[in-house]
Amino acid sequence: MLAISVLGWILRVAVGLIVVVFAYTVIASMLAKFKIAPDQEVDPEAVVPVNLRYRCIVCGAEVTMTAAQEGEEPDAPRHCREDMVLMSLGP
Image 1 (spheres, rainbow, N blue to C red):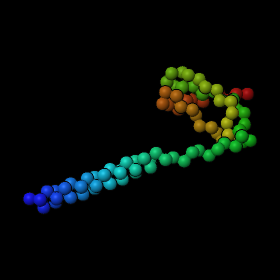
Image 2 (image 1 turned 90 degrees about the vertical axis):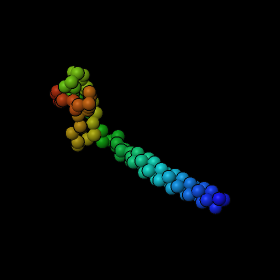
Image 3 (image 1 turned 45 degrees about the vertical axis):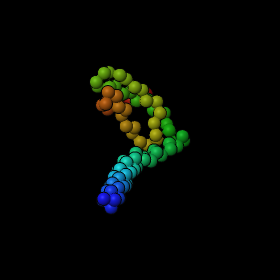
């Protein structure tokens, strides 16, 4: 009777250890997916003045962009979960 009780405890501990290792592996892999490299630093010398006006097609909010990275057409900002529409290029 004592051998059955000891065997039962050994089996329970082994199953418990397997469950703990499995849970640790799953949680660790989920947390590793949150590790995202930061964006590259913007060179302050490469920022140039611009005058771009955007409008949200959903609610009509307007944004004026006054600075952007040199040599690249800036992406339209998002508002109401939609890309804003370029209204005009400033002077």
